[in-house]
Image (tube, rainbow, N blue to C red; front, side, top):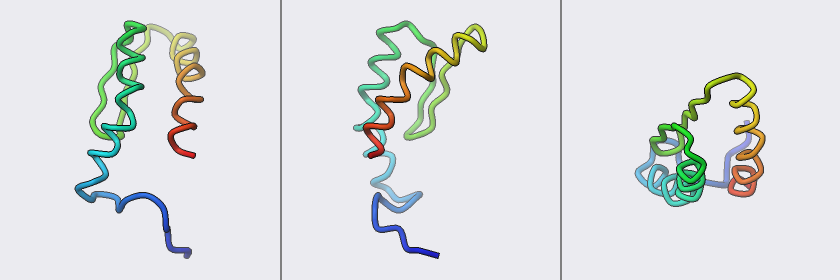
Length: 70
């Protein structure tokens, strides 16, 4: 196993705070688009009316999420 040298410890007190700071822009964009969603820290559910709508939404938010993770 290789030790992880990035990020904060899982379950640590700083992790939810950082997730809320980094994902605030995602929340605002989903609200702007009128999507129904629920997010707690780094767990997020986005609700869509169909499989096709869900796939379109995932495709549109994925680049922004990747930029946060890099």
